[in-house]
Length: 388
Image 1: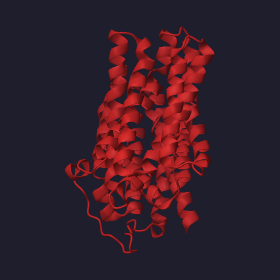
Image 2 (image 1 turned 120 degrees about the vertical axis):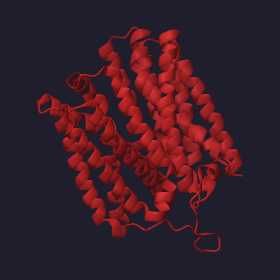
Image 3 (image 1 turned 60 degrees about the vertical axis):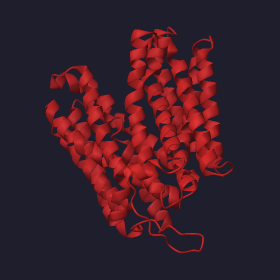
Image 4 (image 1 turned 45 degrees about the vertical axis):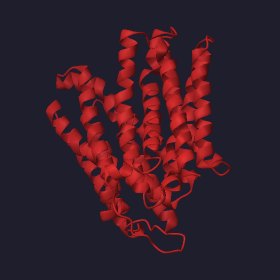
């Protein structure tokens, strides 16, 4: 049962990653067919992000009421429906409408599944599961690329992914007996605790909650800013041609995926806090390498190091949540962590865009260092408040 459910969870994480990079890979074709400006991709992204934030904040209440299995099945079904809606849409307005269930489906399942794994599985599985998410996020654009290359249209690309999600929904429905309705929370006397759902105000008042929210905000801000602006920095400041810069930027995501595969083994020797600190040090080395005038190869090494450093932080922050706050509060905390993550992802990359536009793109590594330092400070304060 344990291994069978773990297999279902692994498949779920691969499937979660599949749609995440579809819009970016299809948009160059989509916007011209839809007759809208290229910038309208940001509108769709924001609708999806707002829905994800809302559902992340509601994940504690939903999971306690329905259980992780049902929340996962319902959320994946919503995502599958939204993706099918994308596949039959021929106007930007229709895409905006379907983006609502797209975002709402993503947030709850992300928070609920991550909490379930944090409570029931070892840290190595959290790292490997997020590596599987990276596999899904890598495969998604290839499926879209296949649809575009075969000239069957971006709608067909979305339809293929929606069918995969529908199959996963069926698997999740049949796997419901394998899930506990809600994670058992056991106190020191071996008795089950009945924990209540917490409001946002109650969550924020928990010692360490604000610190972990800011820590997660900073991590996702750093990851998304690097992914979005690395190519521009290399081209506009380092003088690397656009094609080569794009390849270099791809190394950042490869570093994250490979790093998470390796992190699963390293967690057998190091605990979550040590893994996070190690990742932060490696990111710092990567950013410093990019700052130094050492040529193109050094920039490539720097990006790979930043990716490798990012690899353990996201899964280890999540996995350490029950240790920091207790199993009875972990679902609520992970929900607000996810919401903070999406706020960081949405807010910080555009802010650097303004800096690049009105000051200089050369400040890219400095911007990353500022975010990194804030993340380190917040993580150390979190550990000081909750692990003593």
